[in-house]
Image 1 (cartoon, rainbow, N blue to C red):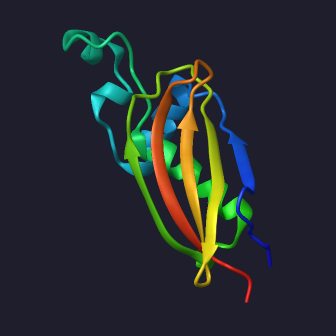
Image 2: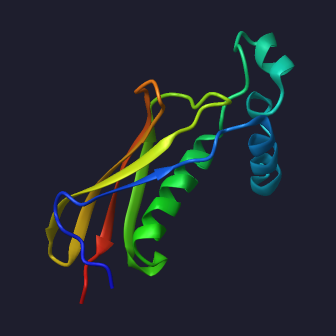
Image 3: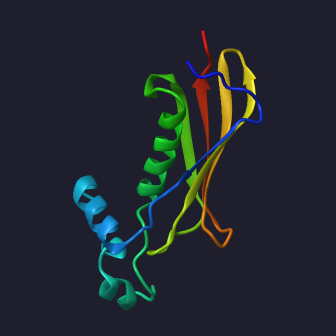
Amino acid sequence: MTTLNPGDTLTLACPKITRTVLALYAGASGDHNPVHIDIDACQAVGIDDVFAHGMLSMAYLGRLLTDWVPQERIASYEVRFSAITPVNSTPVCTGTVTAVEAGLAHLDLTVTLPDGTVTLRGSAALTTDR
């Protein structure tokens, strides 16, 4: 099992968010909101271009956690979206252990764009080694 200590950090460089990725995610998730797949629909409501599903960013953060520990060790996981993830961006997911107590490692989570924009913040608790 993986030992978790305060200050431990893991990052995941996400693949580029292309129109193809957005279309595939829409098909897999069933979320066909036009703001994620149709530039004409976006521009009709004053949005310059399509942008990523928030749940796609959340899924990448989930992958970051399961790269660290098996899924059954995730005791809690929550996020808040703070900005959109534009098409053609390459987000980076980061998790940092902030504390380890009572059998849980507490993590701060972020998804950040190359320009420094944080698109998602969250937290997770992972069970520690037994």
